[in-house]
Image (cartoon, rainbow, N blue to C red; front, side, top):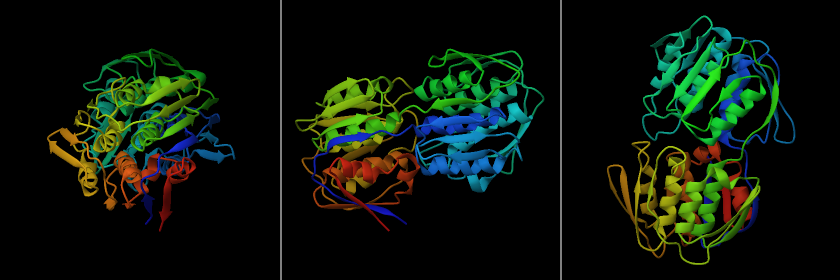
Length: 417
């Protein structure tokens, strides 16, 4: 098992390129199930979750070929078996995203209930209710979702709660349904819009992506297309927070400032100087950060996937900060590990009170989920002495070559077995 060893105390500086977004790539790959023609993706991140999805889609019957320029071509000419087995989906919640496309294309699907990070309950009932509204017959038995239908029918679907994967699953299913589907209380995340843009390029008729009401007119068939995956806004935010925490100055290329306004606003509040230009974001922190309070909420508000990173920043900032987590009920597990480095954090329910310390001290810490891993790396970059982050397989699910990119910015970090 790998771990990261970090020698803290170095300010990050220089330039690095941001990868394509994991949370956009996974649903886009599942969209290839909707057509028998090739779908080509560029700017594909090289991540463990992407590799897992390739394995899952290959098991279903998708032919996958790669090129040397971060590209994938996926062709689902024939669905071998509309099954997503437990052994392939237990580590990745996004596997649920094959349900809608398989049901729309084949009229049947059997998908294992998904796994992923242990950050709290993320029920799939919104997916099931929506597909049932479209005419699917669905049973949950022995850990599997078994679904069957004729051609799906358009319907008005009002979600009980905002769910990104639920919106994406139903949107994909509705592209081949008979009639018009209206999704209300939809997720507004940029990754949903990226998926809609690709589906429209494949011949779908989708309006309203990026708002809370999405309208999909079903079509008889979709065709192949080429699509460039959007930049990863969470990787972008993570590197910006790391630079701010270490008092550094960095330039991130291949990204987009318009997709993380709430994060940039909080970094400016912390004292960072930020310049946004087409395709790049530059940040400089010339003082000790000021603590910022955050409350997570669905996009375009502050993202839950940046909560842990800002907690690490607040640990070395001036003053006291309050962080409130409203999305997942078990997403403060990194706080206990940050305390091992000397952080002053008190947890009460879904609220964390962070009192900024003048210094942290290196120690061995254990990653508990994907974004928690990133927070521990950031804390290790500012701590005195050596910090070892164990169980970094979580990091590899969502950050492409993070130690190599941080090394490009001057960090003293290495991966050891």
